[in-house]
Image (cartoon, rainbow, N blue to C red; front, side, top):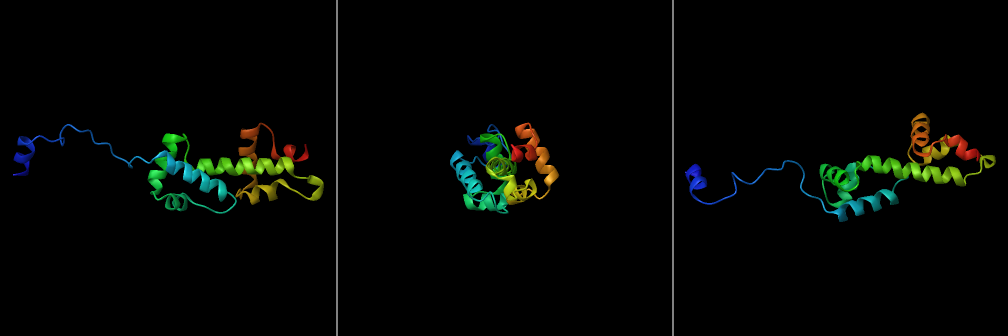
Length: 133
């Protein structure tokens, strides 16, 4: 009976393309997520927390970031943290006891080697060179 109804009555079941995946997430959600990341970058935050604050699921948030920013939410968080660490390194006084490791830890980088590698890639010089400059 269902097959007959689908064959006889006009419908889009056979002609509409199925697009699997998360529903479209509006750019406003991405803006809220970016604002949340920037406000909480020093603390331990997860994609699930960001998504919950924005009222979407984690997969939807990841898809929206990929669509609108070209990166994942965690990649954006890492970049924000790296930028903040860079600013602190530029402003820090090494004579006052500031260290690269302490600044990296402040911004969520638990592994100093990974921080130094990411910093070198982003800024073209080592974080210790920036601190001493």
